[in-house]
Each structure stands twice: as structure tokens, then as C-alpha cells.
Amino acid sequence: MEKGKIRLPLLDKNVNHSPHVVLLGAGASLAAFPNGDVNSKKLPLMNNLIELLGLSDIFRKAGVSFEKNDFETLYDDLVSEQKYQSLASEIENIIYNYFYKMAIPDTPTIYDYLILSLREKDIIASFNWDPLLLQTYRRHIKLKRLPQLAFLHGNTGTGVHYKCKSYGYVNTLCEKCMKPFDPWKLLYPVKHKDYSADPLIKEQWDRLRYKLRDAYMFTIFGYSAPISDVDAKNLLLKEWTSNPTLPLAEMEIIDIKDEEKIEKSWKEFTFSYHYGIHQNIRHSFLWRHPRRSCDAFAAANLIPLNPWKNNAFPEFKTVNELHDWIKPLLKEEEEYEQSKKRFRYRTT
Picture (cartoon, rainbow, N blue to C red):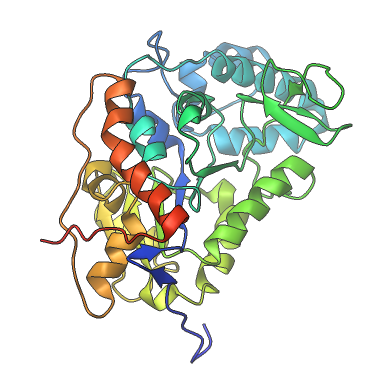
């Protein structure tokens, strides 16, 4: 970062207009659905995907040697050899169908809280193929004031129609031609991904880049930046470190791994001591200051230093209870937009 290029976050009547960017990896879906989906269907990670999806027999029949906990290296080896192209396609179909059939329960999960903890200025960018975040988003759509979403490796909950340059929920019709959307081809774990080859993937990354350049808070939830995502990590690093608000911004990492390993993995991203590591999302600013994370962080760290009292989510049994709880926050946002009424301090 160039000297003298620090920019203060835009504040108006206790309102911080800078984005909060949340980046999700497979660990986030696992944390949100620790017992699986509504049918107890388990969420695989890259280190147990082969075993959980029953791929071992397929590899053995094809004469492919493999390590059960290393799908990423195995898949990269398969697609690099012409003789294994049909096998790679078979594996891709199995993976797609497994995730495609997953469904959320009726009761709130961490994804419900996460989506409702953010505003329209914010974004959730996910590397996950499962449709659970998108399904959760749809059941809150009537509230309107929701964050943007970006799916960086594709998603089984989204359909595409490249001819019309459109996309939407899977199993719905393209509004331009009224034909069914095609499945969105997932981006699988190869060492060197082309994030611009698929125009929809490129759009997702452009959306994230735009927000990350201006973000005041950056939360990484359950994403460990594996070797196969080296290009993704470099893209994220370039945008985050060019952010002129960086010396004042905060980075939060939510992960159950050893803290020293986490710090080592993300040391290029952290500025001084402006970061926090949590094993549980309930300790994060997202949970303690829902819909006000950037506002509360600015109040606590910018002169005149007025820390806000925590307004943490309670635990809810139903989605309607959760909706009722955030209505005062939504109303406050509407009043600010209509008459510039100040967000009230929630001071200690």
C-alpha cells in the first residue's frame, strides 16, 4: 500500500457505508449443518469426499491408485491425462448429483443468521458447490434487505443459459426465452483454474473484487486456501491489500484449526494486529453486531471512540422468530434512507 493513501470509511449518522465481505469455504457449510442436511445427508470436505461419495470402487475398477484423503490431487491428475477424461466426467456427475439433492431443514441454521447479519452493501462469496446457502437465502427474500451473493466455483442451486446470458434458480425458466436453465458446470479442484473462461464465474469474481477493494471488514469462515486454490488466494490478496482502508480495517477468521496454523496461512492478508481468530461464528462481529458489524467496529476504533454494546443474536427455534427479532434493525435502516435518521448508539 502506498504511503498517504489511507482512506477513512464513509460514516454518516453512525452509519458505515463500507462493505463487510464474508468468504465461505466448505468448513462453513459443515458448521451450519453439522448433522447433514434435512435428510441427514453429510456434507463432504475434500479430505473425505472420496469415502463419503463412495468413489473408491470406481477408482479401483479404473486402475487408478489414490489416497482417500486427497481428492484434489487425484482429480488434478485425472484431468491432465487424456485417457482419464471419461472417468473424470463420471466423477463430476456423481459429485454434482450428490450436492444437487441436498436440502435445508425448516429450523434456522447458522446460514440463516449469517445472511440476516448483513445488509445490501455487503457480500457473501462462497467456494461451496452445495445449494444450502442459496436455499437459505430464498426463504428470507421477502425481507429484501439482504446481502449480495457470489459463487466462486459454481453452485448446484443455480441454473444458467449462456445463449441468453442469464442465470437464475435451478429448475426455473429463463425469463428471456422461457426455456429451462441448464445446470451450471462446477469449477473443480485443479491447480490452475481459469476464472475468466466461464462468463458467469467471471461475473462472480468481479462482484467480489469490487466489494473487497472497499471493504472495512473481511471475514473468512471455514476456508483454508488449499494448494489447489493458489490462484484464488492470489486474486483475493491483490484486491484486499490494495484496499485504501486496509490500515483501519479488520479481518476475522472463523476456523477450528490450530491458531498458529491459521496465522501462518493468512499472514500475507493481515495488517499489523488488525485481525481476530475465532473457533465459533458466535464470537464474531457478525453475530455480536448483526447488520451493524462495520458501524460498530468503526464506533469502537475511530475517534471519538464510542464502543457499542453487543446486540448478539439469541438462539431461535423458528425462522419467523428470527425475522421478528431483526425487524427493528430493518426499520432503522429504512428510516435512515428516508430521512437520514441516525443509527442509535448501542453504547456500553
